[in-house]
Image 1: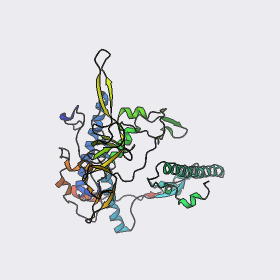
Image 2 (image 1 turned 90 degrees about the vertical axis):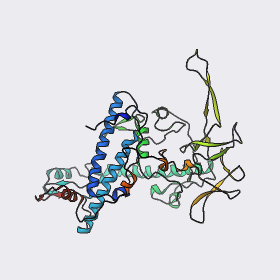
Image 3 (image 1 turned 30 degrees about the horizontal axis):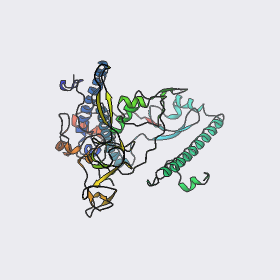
Image 4 (image 1 turned 30 degrees about the vertical axis):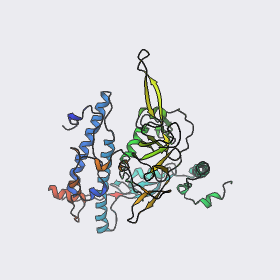
Amino acid sequence: MEFFDSKENWGEPSVRVGRPWKLDELRLKSNSDLHKLWYVLLKERNMLMTMEEEYKRQSELFPSPERLEKVEESMENLLDVVAERNRALSLLETGETGEPGRRWTYNQLGIGFWRKCKEYHMPQYANPRMIKMNAFVGPWQHKYLRLMRERRLWERNRAKRREYRRWKEYSAMFPNANIEPNLEQFHTTLASSMKGTPE
Amino acid sequence: MRLTQFLLSRYFKRYVEREMTHRTLRRQWKPISGWKEAVKKNWHYEEHRPWTDAFRQDNQAGQWHPRVFVEPIKEWWIFKGDRVEVLTGKDKGKHGLINSIIKERNWVYVEGLNCEYTMRSQSPNIQPICMKSEKPLLVTTQVKLIDPSDNKPTDIEWRFTEKGNKVRVSVRTGRIIPLPSGAKELEDFVNPESYTECEKDTKDDEVKEVTFQPRLSTFEQDIMDAMGIKENRKPTKTYWY
């Protein structure tokens, strides 16, 4: 079985290997080619994981461990291309993506989240597990949700002030660098964030 | 628009992240989720690369380092193999080629310059040998690119030529400073132009070969047709929620 690397690479300090497959390169290939490539990548990944374990067992350094990340990226790109093709066909024929989609729902603590739709054999109103989930919702959650909301607000404000202070510190230290405060992550502009902050 | 190539793949960053976090982060007990690795943001970068043991020791839980202020550089103007002049220290005024760059600290190593001499011996009885090791220099203040026209240090600007290429231009004389060969080296220390293909690599012409034929069928159906698999059963009604 091809779970081990070729004997020339055993004990080497590094193994030279190319780069991962790009999305554009995979888009040129036919479906059966991609199918075959998937198994080639899978065998390579199995081989690398076996070799990693074997080197650990022998208390030696595994050469070129970035090969695992390269294979992982190639496989992810392959799945993206396949999903792209299926989505395109589905949109053309039905007008919908054909993917499961997601819906906004609440968990047992009353916290909202986007839930990925799963496949069931019975409708939601008849599924005993889904009926049980409604029993957890109640007015007792309001206090804790309010506290959560307050916490999220002050965390965000503190982060904004921290970023603003850091920007002032760095601009004073490096006046020629033209540093801009990164406040976009808090979905505000500098003007609106400056309203409440002390000068 | 950046002149020099940058790695389009995500794999190198992921690999470095894995090497940094593996065995460095301490685990905390969270009431509902269980044992979780603590999130670490203040990584301390020194002369050692993130996948080395020395880096792991520097960043272990409980280690404290004084805060380091690194000037954020938007576009790097110095590359491996560039000729620069050292402006501070013992080797002030000397020219040298750049060996390696550490972007996290804005550091640059110049070949043979700004060195530290230490006496090291393998055991107390053996005579110590003088070891020479290069010390890093700051890119912004301690090192400057050399203008080829008059061999003097100069500041540079990125400007566009008439053809539309982005080049480094000396501010003092206006001469274009050409890029060294090391500029083509990517983040993962591989120069794509000088790379020779190995046994497991797919050859360039095979990669560029177009075998895709668009068909009005899903990926799965296409494979089934190619392999001669026939599925006539109808699936039962399922609900998605």
